[in-house]
Length: 471
Ligand code: MN
Ligand code: MN
Image (cartoon, rainbow, N blue to C red; front, side, top):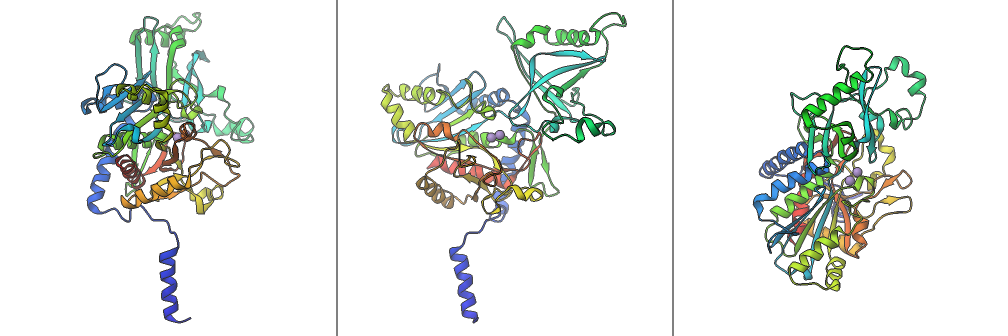
């Protein structure tokens, strides 16, 4: 072959073929400074917001100086928030154009897989005091053993007071744990069983104490009573107050930078707080947005978005209905028009390819760490079942937008066609007839107590969200 031909072949390749970009490559030294600043702030958010309630509290504090008015009780404004039971929150911001001309929505979730306390949790067995748990969301149960755990949540008292509990995060706090079985005796009880069976849900019991209340050995429950007495001293609660509580067991400790090069972030609850934080920052930082913006940060995604504070509710209608009402639009058809013509990013994470488990991914259509923001045209299982699928025209618009704003991104399915699957909030937004697509970052070791993301991807997602809300 002649050299002219081989040159034109290279031109053909450069001009016509797709190749994945590493998100670090286009980042300048200057841009990297901003990226690191953003990621440091994100790490703080991860540590402060390990439950949906803590995320909403953090967001309320964060927006307090930014002029957001309470949509239910506040004055007429260009910016509103709607806090729903302290577990989900919406932020609305006017654009240059009226909201009836277009609305850009980013929806993410702020709940994460975890262990909840049961309603009757406290007992003693062999002079050890335990709390019984019931896991929430898709967890590999064995990942929750033999690690430091913290207790976060609220106990709601009959008089209406909420007692906040957070133990296991401060250096001076005790931690808690679920003890596994020693390998010497695990042969039959565990090792020959399927991984899904060797830790039954009923064995996910948290060790919370071993000291007796008194030395009178005839006293029944003297170990459990010691813990109850301590809880009563510290929080004023009795055993039956656990009946009205939202208490979550989460991994103790802070999120950390990972790797000699500190290019990754490892920590609990990044699905989906990594997207929630980017959405929050995007709506606050967006410069002079053309259209109205809405950020929805929802609870209950990990159990299917069912429940009063989840996305499979009237929440979106309530929020936009109230916004329109503040502007004097009371007609249902205006609400219907705004919702059906909105554009939405369903901001949620996707799985990153794990080189040791490459067999579950279609490598041409997989998510990769450091390949930038990840877009999924559809989710679901088997034949795209239970999924929203985005329109080609909407994706074309996003391609143009991301190109204009130097956002590195790639497209991914969760795994191979027959391998499994999952869903997100997208379908509940699509219900209204709006354009919606899944957008987020790839996560390695997703749904584990220690999820891994890339700083470059996080940065690209934030840039993408901000550009989406500005245009
Ligand atoms: Mn998620
Ligand atoms: Mn999830």
